[in-house]
Length: 255
Ligand SMILES: [Zn+2]
Image (cartoon, rainbow, N blue to C red; front, side, top):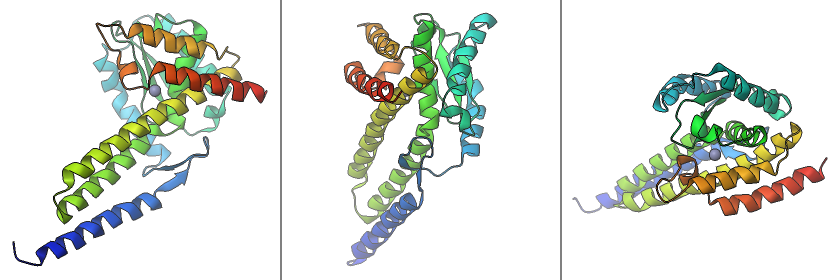
């Protein structure tokens, strides 16, 4: 390498990092439903399109939709009740609640824009109020725009990593920081969704303490033989239960 070229490399690297940072700042917006400022680089319409496009594939990965239409209708009813009694109704999102045939994997998840899913394995262990807790939590992910935020954050870290790799041989180091940031955000997402879920339960007339039961069911499902996906990507249930209790006190006090 020619002497002095490292200066140019560092300069270009820093320029890329600065660009990524400015992009991130420009993409800051306040979520009108949660009041939280977050990094977002897509519109609600794009979120809805991504969700609708990915929904059939997600269902396929869990053995397709559950064949009993009566149970699906029950899930639809509970989901609609939560949407109609909460701020979810005022959002541009299109909510659909899919009961998946998978009777082995205890899981629930949401795609951006309103497509929510619960496996039969989890559904079959829940009462109506507990189902409301799980669906409320998933609606929380949609309204909290967590997927869109992760996408924006990860493209930020990709650009930073690129800048650092150009500037010096630090790509690996910055890459690790990036991943930790994503994981930290993930835990925050879960706690925000739990809190929104508790609020939607109260607004829809469900006993919010059933959300604590949901955490206990998830914890019990995490036996030695299998770690449910829902739990492996989520924070420690004990930690969540504490936060859920705080949320119940906060929102029941407002009534
Ligand atoms: Zn979650």
